[in-house]
Length: 362
Ligand SMILES: [Zn+2]
Image (cartoon, rainbow, N blue to C red; front, side):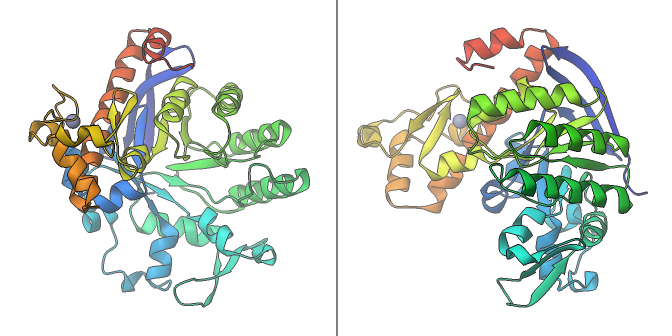
């Protein structure tokens, strides 16, 4: 077994906790944000690290398709070397994407069958392949293969997806660094059964799947609190759902240890810069003459270099990729700093006060 997963909880405040995650020789403090999507496509590894990032996510499906199933076609086996990323890499099967490409009859007991949009070839992606490729790529954490269903899918479909997910969890040999999928969409009893099945295989932790960012924040809060109560204290809890900044903070308050995040980039792509948890919209005309940096006193590389709001406004008007990059660096830095402060608040057992100061209802 290549990668061992160790998780130590060091402090709690309400449902939230902070601790230390060790994956082999790599480690990171939790709650831990995992950068995914546009952030990792736009910033280099060193820029990500300079903005305080410790973990990125990679999809095994992408590499499996790119290499046409042949590992020697990849030119590399370890993603840390390939991406020049020394931090933690969270693997994902990429099953959700495969299911989105598949027709309803593509949902097989053996996996998911779909047409590769790049080659138009028919593919069968299986839980065994997802496991092998996450391991082959050197992912520090793996996520088990789940049959995807929409959060609002009918009862029988959600039940069928949960049964199938459990069967794959029990029949495929998952290594110790695997996070077992918990599914069930909007149905409490299906989620409860899925959480029980996941615990039965004694995984390294749990990946709470299918909680769509489109689900209202109050409902997310309720469901996450409910799942936290069902899962054992000791297991690491991963929420692979990207949402807005408020959703990230609420997920941490509800006891999540690892959370996917792309809000720094999505906010920047809309011309927004974080000022605390608020947004400054750089596209607004009155900023054209504003010589101040984004946030006076901010220690991020963008503000430290002295780029003015006026210049960033101009870059965004010109649709310059440089403008978006500078904004992402600032947003990512602010986001990671906020999570650092949140960890300190958990350690001091004053999370509720911290969230109240941010005007976030946790
Ligand atoms: Zn800044």
